[in-house]
Amino acid sequence: MPELSLQLLLDILAIVLIDLLLAGDNAVVIALAVKSLPERERRLGIRIGAGFAVVLRIGLTFFAAQLLLIPWIKLVGGVLIFWIAIKLLSDAAEDAAGGAPATTLMSAIWYILIADLTMSTDNILAVAGTSKGSLPLLIFGLGLSIPFVVLSSNLLSTIMDKYPIIVWIGAAILGRVGAEMIVTDPVVHANLHPSMTVEITAQVAGALLVVAAGWFFAKRRAT
Image (cartoon, rainbow, N blue to C red):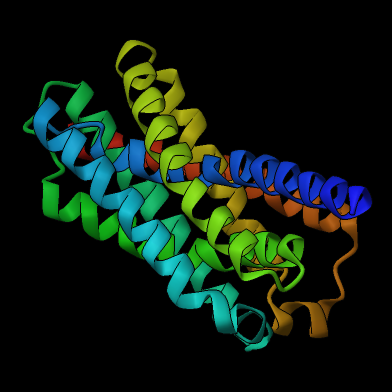
């Protein structure tokens, strides 16, 4: 019995740590998407975005592993993450330049929904694997991600207001996530067999690509 209790505590601790780590990607998307919104709409967008993230996790839980094995799924998802990161970055740059806010509440929710849909599968598998088939632990892990995502999104959006460089860092993180999804897609792996060095290089290149593209489109909008 003590061994069982200790294992349960270790599993709970592992799930908490996983949620803390994996909430970051979703929080970055949400914070970037709502950055240009008025304060009231920003709070609403964060809550709706976090709610979508959790609902999608619950809905995808039972076939997440199968989804990751479907060719092209992660590749298409990675491309979508690239597009969202570049769009949000150029919108934020336009807003900072004094133009009309480029993001509405509905467009922010749309960005969040697409990003959550493409990014949730890996997160689900990490929590599901740690829960070892225990439904209460799985529900605990999915439920715990709600406050983590909300708190992280609120904190990041506030920091982005004070330090605009965080916007670019957040977009670079999404670029890294997009590149990781593309290079780990079953089709890419089966045909190219990328090494760990290649995967890391691709992630760095993805981050730099998003920043460069965001800067380019922001410049074009300003002229």
